[in-house]
Image 1 (cartoon, rainbow, N blue to C red):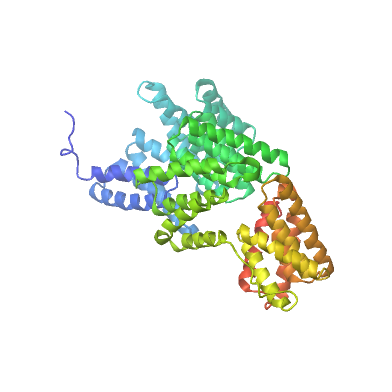
Image 2: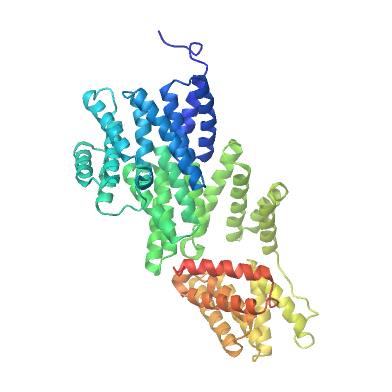
Amino acid sequence: MQQTNLDKPSWMEMFNKAILLHQNGITGDKEAVREGYHLLKQVRNQVPDDNLVIAYYGSILCLIGRDASDPMERSANIIRGFKYLDHAVTSEPANFEIRIIRGNVCVNLPEMYFHRSASAIEDFQFLVSCYERYPDSIPAELYFQFLYNLSLAYGNLGKTEDTERIQAKILDESKDPKYQLILAQKKNGNNLYGDNHFLILLQPLSVILAEGEKLHQRALAGEKKDIKNATDFFAKAEVLHGDNQLLKAYHGDCMSLAGRDASNTGEMFANAIKAIKTIDAAVISDPENVKIRVIRANHSMRLPELFFARTATAIIDLEYLAGRNQQDKELFNKDQSEEILYKLGLCYSRLGLNTEAKGIWKDLLPKVNPVTQTKIEAQLQNNLRLEFPKTLSLETNREGFYTEAKRIHNLGVSGNKSAAQLGLQLWEKAHSYDSDDPLAQGYYGSSLALTGRDATDINGMFGNGIKGLKQLSEALDRDPDNWELRLLRAYLTYSLPEVFFHTAKQAIQDFLYLKKAYERNNKLFAKELYDRILSDLANVSKRIGQC
């Protein structure tokens, strides 16, 4: 007779929830581990002699140990966990589920510290033998996971012949491409992630996607090693799940990130174009997948509009996401909803649709958090047209003229195109008025390069960038100890695309000069500027692999 909910023991519902939390904990969810531990503790108090409960309790103690920051606490919890696991196996040696639990714990622990690979071998040998005796009762996929874990346990003990024997058996009997991929990678010594990441590729697709999302976020932060790790992970995951469009979109985005940091333009353009095609194909195949739409919108916004003309694509995706959010208020949280609209305004502004941009931002402004509010206010300021006070002239008040011209130049640096154009006019006038003044020449060069940034043609971008840098460097040759000129050149060379201009080393030299100058005299400029210089020095050094 089928058991009804009324027939179930009172603790079973709590136990089933704890098992789900335990599974989430295995994939790295620390909060799930803590919650699962408290539930299992309550269940064990109700049924102290249930060996399956004891086994799960022992396993979750090991997970608590895994997450502990104190080495002594870590070891103590893992050793306590062993005792419960061993007790459960000794009490019920033929319990299939208990053997799986202990085997999975033991194979993933460092052998040099805990010496549990022998227990893992015992458990997985038992599980393999169960399948071989009753092949119709156990899924073949589970059997090959047991074999793979058995090969890992043998490898942990340095038993090369046994490892190779088991792996050959897997390759001979399994048609699953993931084993072909994983074992080929291990044979070639190209295990970039370690066994834990390869084990992730053996997990259900939901686990692979969760891990992929984390790797993608790390790649977006800009570290070259993280970009490489993510790109390789998605390449492998795509082999295993070739029909999953989200994996393809992640992979395409990571390829583009790798191209962004390329040392030559050919590689940069090739990666960007390949990524565009890959992500576009993913959207065509799965047009209602909001995660893919977010990836394409952000990727399109990252690409230089002058070369790739992808802002219109970003607008299409962001408008789609905003519309979906209107239909389903649970689709995005508040911050995500605000970010979509803020970026939509940026895209409108980039294409000169300032009325549309202002309309979105002004509607959004009263509702957003302070950080987004500051960003919106800055963008609204950038869209303002500026006028230079007619009362200020070089002839009667050079200092006042310079002060206001610097303010306008800095607004141009922040993104105000009108200020950048006006700043160029002012500093060209100042340089013509006194061609021997290095400061006027330096600001003129910086302003010239700024208009290159905003150019709508390639010749304007390259021509003004090169001419502006030349003027600024000549000004510094005339006044090499002028920290203000150093700052202008540092941020100009920092902002120019490395793949075209190769100016990162010059930026590093100027940042180091400014760092040392401040450390000799901390009244030279504000501490906030010094902190920013240190941060940007680290960023540009990472960009070219110097740290």
